[in-house]
Amino acid sequence: MLWKIPITLEQLKPWFEGDDMIAHLGIECVEVTDHYLVARMPVDHRTRQSFGILHGGASAVLAETIGSIAGNLCVDLQKFYCIGVSIYTEHLRSIRSGYVYAKTHPIHLGKTIQRWQIPITDEKDQLISLSVLVLAVKAHNGAINHPVIEAVRKIYPHLSWKSQ
Image 1 (cartoon, rainbow, N blue to C red):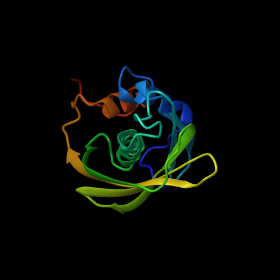
Image 2: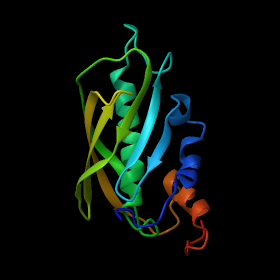
Image 3: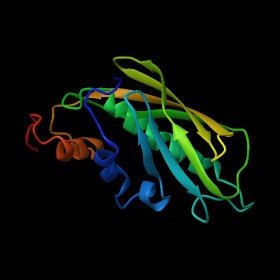
Image 4: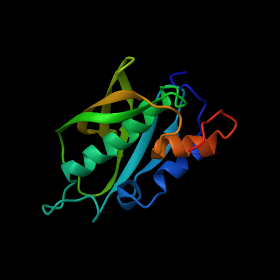
């Protein structure tokens, strides 16, 4: 298993239900396995640009969202957390409606840097764009106020966490 802690689709839901860009764009996690996560996003008025096609920035948000969550699941969250350093997204095909799907693939999971490849496909599994996300792995003292850490604290209250 790739993840440091077992995780279910139900346990990931709170990460997608906040008052933030993720919820605003309608991004949701739709598949969790031992080796990858899949998120989907609607192609609608929230995610299209003025030409009526999926906005490249929305694709980058989808990739960074699911890649960042995957990266954080690969570290001991009682000691470390991951934050985005860079994202590169290449747009290969346009789409006007429906859903796009982002699937995480680790390229490198190092002690200080992670690199993820995240293809974004349509409902017919055609490649729409391809992102590469680089995450920095940062140490913390257990009292960090970070949304991922807070979500994990709620999901796994039995783990020993320092008080804030």
